Image (cartoon, rainbow, N blue to C red):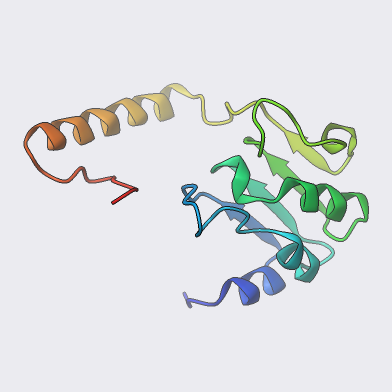
Length: 132
């Protein structure tokens, strides 16, 4: 495993999957026009994190122009609305923010929430704190 820059990652990857929090100034439009323009033509991008992590307008353009092979999105930049033209594309899979809605994942979410709550009540920093 080797740590590389975002530019290297998007240039060399066949599949990019996003699983990061939305942090203003850091991950908002993490994938935009520049990143999409240097991806391989056969590359796919998957977003299950937060919609605004990808600049959807730039993504629609890249998909229409076949600059990347495809995308799968479970989250959208302007939920519940879709960016214009997104649903018309044949190289995109869209799910309504429920791809993780299994019994196993929902149980894990509940357990995580309880652990964070209990840590806060004990005066500790919650183990999964995103904003500090």
